[in-house]
Length: 430
Picture 1 (cartoon, rainbow, N blue to C red):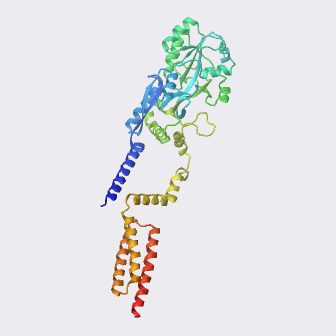
Picture 2: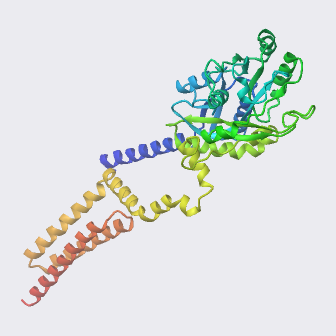
Picture 3: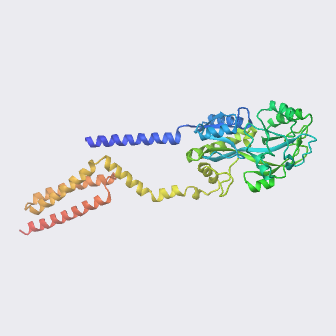
């Protein structure tokens, strides 16, 4: 084996190792994504932790690490600072600039708990009242601010006090004689009972649930919001809470990713989450709230390309889904084969050099035949031609001879055989 062939084999080995490492890194090696989540103990964080645990047990390639934060602002800041790859954010607030949706983790329900006897019967009656919002975030944005703007409240007429923890409800109501408490709670959350009991103790009587009749109008203005009814007894059965069905507004809790995150990774993560959802529901019923996002044009939430690919795949036919692959197999095979042949010739030029040498030898044989007057020399020439033909046939069988090279040999050998035939006839006439 020549020096050039040795380096050719070395380059081919390195190419194969590099391709194998690339395939392992992009197709096999586990990838862990960091998720910025609400405070520990909340329904959302418990669900994400259960999902992360399920993905590890299933040996999923894309896995999750949940990082709790104290507020929505802290979640958004960590996401924007690239300290998290994913984030669980409320859709009633402005999404981070680089965020696109992956899935819906659940829905929030807007509730207004009114002090009995306060004379508040509709949302517009909250104008200028003493209010508090139970939220881990700032009160200057969100669903209640949207409702206040829809009702044409000025900023001075709607300034709810921020209450971050349940234990602060009583002192806030007692100190300020609050008229109502605003709360956005995950639909189906049992934690709401603690909030309602805290408000009841502070008011000294069960609070009145305020119907939000503006929900339908808000949903027309902003499609993120939906007008829905809370069924009687949906929040608690004993006592029946609320006592009657009432209209309210809901909005989604989103799992978002950075816009430039790998589509393949997000598609695989989305598929894995929905794959383990059914098994996860047995120990965590809230997993049933995991839902797909709307990928149609004009949807309320921009969807990551990887997640959209997963959602749309279930709605397309086999031919539509794999048309690009089929096209590549049918029409790109010859191009791929040509590229492989070119690479092998660049790495292993010995066969090409051998062909060039043998072609040159055939031309030299033709010169000698034209100058020879000896029948024995013609026999030797034909014997050598047979050897060269055998070598060419072997290379052709191994796929190392392309059509242009074969044509050059065919023309040369045909011409050479004709020359030998004419030379023999000339010798026989003498």
